Image (cartoon, rainbow, N blue to C red; front, top):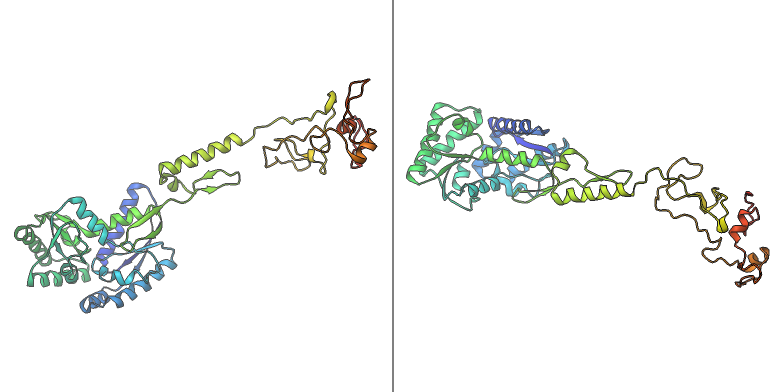
Length: 388
């Protein structure tokens, strides 16, 4: 699936998402289709300060329109701070949005944490990740320390690099959350915080929102979604199997076969097996045998119903007939299963109309019109047939 990322907020976080997706696809041997649209980190910082969610949502929606034009099928915002306008963005977005907020909440549930600490932007800390943590109590740095964490985070995200002073601020805030407020894990509520924590021992456990979100995007990129929930959860739908010219169900790609459920694989297997049983081998041509042992071949002209033999080729076309279950032509006469000629046919063939009694001398019944045809006589429609 083609992924569209809203990047640039900030630049380091965009690179983190990009590297995370490329590494995951490289390990799994799958192909990554990705387009990134650059947003301005200064616009985000200004709209965060004024809490103008509607304005920021309009900016992101315009960028998503570009992603859609480039072929993206779903979009994601590479910033937890940028999620402050997610409720305003969802109704106007040209593409489904894969939000990182419910993914982080699910990760907290899986960890069975009771108390978590949060550091990041002011909006993220004050709203406890927008009120999304449903299974644990969220705690944040108090008072002036919260402002200090926010200021240092914004400076780091804008520059795309971390200083030792900024790292010490984040480490000290996290350590106090664990020691003073009994946080079991510290949630890195800013996607640029990996700059400070990656490769360093902070002295306390952390849960990186950016890594959780990148993993969710990777999982979504391997499937074909039908829609996205308002919360961002993706409903994965396998491509319906295509039908080839012979009627066999086949998957459109190897990926779609791998992603089939057991029931879908079973249905595809049954369909293919059924067709194989119906497909004919080189069947021998049947020769219709007329009544009373006459073995003259049935005429196969284009105007005759006998031109299609069961499982054979169509006369004059050199192709197999599409309907392999075509029954052989009736042998009991030109008028279906009634062997007795009727009306003018009976008069022309020399038997009384409606006569069904047997000849007392020979013991035979009325003449069979088909038998007379094979002896070179004219049929009831006046078509001259080849003599025996």
